Image 1 (cartoon, rainbow over the protein chains, first blue to last red):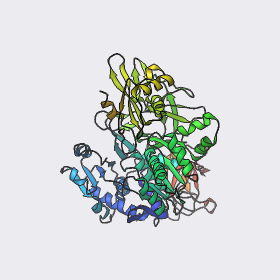
Image 2 (image 1 turned 135 degrees about the horizontal axis):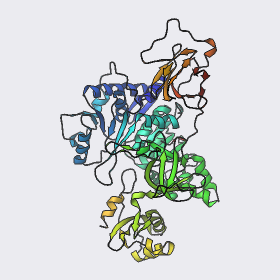
Image 3 (image 1 turned 45 degrees about the vertical axis):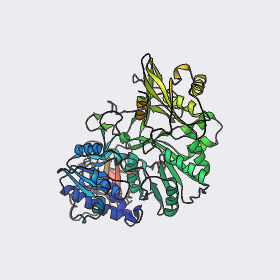
Image 4 (image 1 turned 180 degrees about the vertical axis):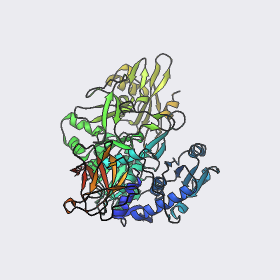
Length: 496
Length: 103
């Protein structure tokens, strides 16, 4: 079992169809396979044990992903935003390696004998492979290794085996389901699980991938029009920027070919999705929830759920616009309390997931699955009576104040309700009396005013006194990573 | 008789069909396509192997084939004219799951 089967099938059935477009360059599915096999031959000849990738989104990313698979080696995309010291440390961990890099990133790597680097352009122009060995059929072979961002300590190497990824794709995507003219615009970075699952899903669907380097709302809209884009995946921040751009520029939201937008990778502000549904009434919106360790999507809030929530007067149904949907048919979900007891509907606890696509495994730490195959996501949440999953932050973000568990989410929601507040984040701060205390960082809307005591009073009135931030910092912006995830660990430093 | 392991590949002896095993019950089983045992690894078709005209229901690329209790699941990676039979029972296409595109 090997993910190369996905590309082999696409290349055999629709070899002439465009696989990937980026700027002026394009590859058909037959060419993508030919380039990937050429890359596999070069990687094997180098004696590498991993295929690394250090570049922005471009045709070299899907080529390198499949080249690694044809060579039977793990694919390890690296985050090009890391510092040279961090990058070289990760490179050392995958040596001996064959490492594809963009010209701007090559100088960041310290040369070493056991890492053969190849510039992106040379990698895409390798001589065609002569006779490649059949990749091993072992379903347990590692397909992808992703270094997690590492909230504490060294980055962990999450591993996804061929059986995890194949189970995910074959279980959730219909082969060749894309229409001839369909195209998906890809704006997630290549080292993100959504960037990898997007390549695999599109390949199996035989869908054209339109790649954009980085994200800019105006450029995204222009690319959608130019390429007749039918599908898009966005992180919430990107959708927010598109909505804001359309509002401020007055540009018409005319994207006649666009049929579907999937979003995930972080919490979607309710106002953003509501606004987007009005701006793009013809578009099917899907919220996809997943983790690196689960080979991407495990729960989906589909287009019908979105429309039902928007049209309903029943608060329980309306509220579902804020949920991440129901478990896909490929996995099961469970909510447990701190002691491992399974909880019933509407009882908040810790989210557990089980299914063949769930790897839940790290290279050094091993498998985190329990005896029955359940993986602790470390996300907090609850399931409603009909199985819709609501998330409430990470277990690690909970503030424990004098033995009481406080979720940052509910306090942030109150703060965001204040007319002057543009953005708010609540984190733990050290407290001599309570162990941990509640701290808040606030970004005010341009020209708006709010005092610390005013905001404290608001929280006290709506929640209770233990929830009141004992310290509030006013900032010009909150720290987010490139996929729109709030960097709470960075924020916590402000309150130490 | 053959043992079917997840990830292993089989091909028809009498048409173009190829499959990959997604899951299979343990032990030895018979897997036929077009009425003739499917081949794996370096096996080659017996001389004069011919399809049973009654077993040409076809196998479609991209479809998953299962037995009645779904203990066996095969992914067709290349289509062919033969239909598949596992331990004496014809395999059926697993119903496609309606899932909106999420990535």
